[in-house]
Image (cartoon, rainbow over all chains, first blue to last red; front, side):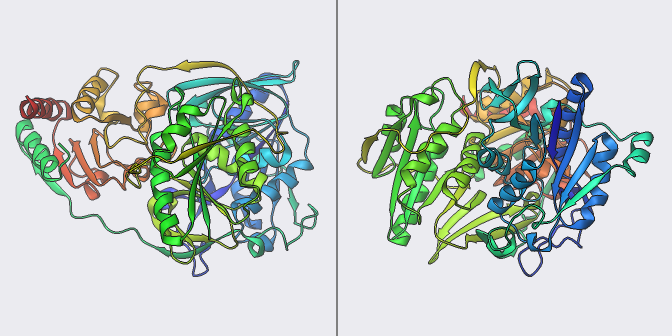
Length: 262
Length: 324
């Protein structure tokens, strides 16, 4: 079984230093970079499946060239190899361009399953997976809480979380699955994993390698643009109340009443 | 004269989702500002009820009965039919919900219709062009964005506008499925309803939420009682979900749902960044926590320092005393 996991390096949310540059693009120098948290759940799910069924896990990333350092952490968790699509023309790519580039990179790879994370902590869009599936005409199974491939039958079954419970959905492989954290906590890289990750292959691809034209993908061809960015309005001061439980409850009721919430 | 297409999402029982009626209301105001038209599209195996309900909010709704949706995941065949309907309108702007089905449909439609996507809008306005407000980096930055060309797809978060019906309902136009329905289907082999996940927290006006401090599933009974008394839904932090006290569908935060209720009552929640990003735009935030130095003290409107069970029970008594 061969699984490709889409991984995006994102500014570390814990560092809380993310910002946009004057061009409306992410200021990548402002913040340390980590593997997107939701992609780590996808990677963990992929690693467990190849442990059970045999096979390999390939990371696919579209990012600046220095993203290889961040990819090493995901390789240390146990992925077999990485593919990094990096090209100066990709800065400022929109969703449509991102899915086209990743789809082109996937066409070069052999796989049974492609996993993506639920969304990214920087952009939060969560639509690239569906777009890649449509572009490659792969079955698209989203919001997975459980993934059960049947390699002999060439099919995959997924428990898809719905607002009121879950659906069990099924499709032939190859297919694209959007993973959720319900699949299980990502592992920490072992020391052995960290050592071996240093020598694992990260193949680089440019737009020219993928036969893509900078006139149709990347920043110059973006379908969306940031017009303006600002900090959110500050919240008012916090009122802190100490006292008996009844006094505390009375304070809450008073605030609810004053704001017409009860 | 731009056209605003509202993709109506049917609920499991065939009714229209509340979020779709909010988006319909928004589309009407955009159409009025832009001198354009707002049109609904409902795609389902049997779209009659949802289309009729959506027409309570839009002057014109197109209903496409697509038999392929019966027994298959909704978003792919629905996206194909929406693409067919808007195919003759390359300048059209498509508005839909930012829930799981909406985002699935948006990604597919982006490729089928060659349009860009702006996701999870918190406000949409017309100012000679469509201006879409979104929050980036978990709410640390607010952006205003637009499409570089004509046409586009915007997914919109719940509770951004209040749904207002039309004085007189619009018309429903039945249309046969068309276009190029060639994307692979995903079969739904079973549907399971889980208790406790009934109230959608993304659409809730009031959320009472519990964290690690709630201590266990028994503690969530008090959270549930308070939510019921206030007419709200139950939310939770990742720690509470990971402990198995409450289903993932109720999780709020970076890897869960992002909510914007009128009231967020946080019980035993410290307010770590991963949770904060999911609820910080709530209009009123009230926290009960033993620790006066918990991070939530920095962004709540009111922090009651104390035991969440003692304060929670006292609050329940006080609320029942008011209503009784």
